[in-house]
Image 1 (tube, protein in one colour):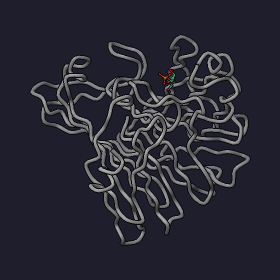
Image 2: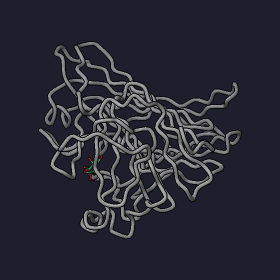
Image 3: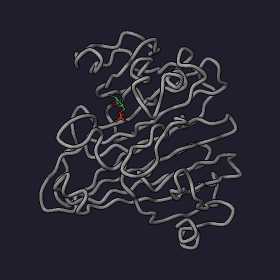
Image 4: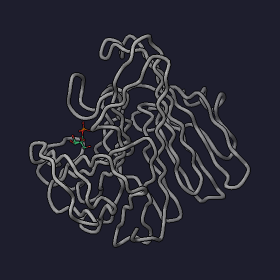
Length: 302
Ligand code: TA6
């Protein structure tokens, strides 16, 4: 499979495909001028690594499972058409389904950018779960930052609603050193407290227990992910994603997750961008576009 993908989509010196975990094909994007590298599995259109001169920015569980309809623990799970629990499986089917590589390219004008397009269309599998024809394309641009462009098109005859999120696991030196900055004053759904709605009072959200919050209609853009023990912070820009999720399962929940384990929870902070609180209503023939850019920065405050 990797060989076929290399023949069709490989770009010498920038994009190659290789056999990854559990033999799943994996695209490796390399941008020498940016000193950056990114890995993405067509399975789930799942980014599993992004490194820059500041090191690895993405957390992957050592116990993650790959393929066979399982969601990969860590990386950037692509959540569609449902966020969380509901009528279909938790977080929908997009993250544990094979997407197709439909394009790769390198833009040689500065800043040199290495790109890959992945696409998922409705199938009997998806229609049996969620009876709406759709076509979704996720484009990843690797320069000195990562830009993700995500399109969802309604290819059917009827309007449908959907939720969407990029459920990013950021690697941190230790959860006690990490904070998400820019959420002060925002109303959030506290999923640890039965869905209670509260207002964030802190300029920097730090985690010292299980946290599972959906911050609604966040105006601040970018949000900053700060790690006191790392040289860089990360600027999280977004358009088309109104909400931001902050999650860490902490000890007990992590212990109960076979693909995570309690020794892992201090090493990541999920800061996710999404359309969650108010699902997107997409009329027939229309297209939704969400953009998320993750950029290393030396800024530690907004
Ligand atoms: O984004 C936070 C969350 O919705 C949590 O409630 C937790 O369920 C997490 O996602 C992971 O979900 P998963 O289905 O990947 O185990």
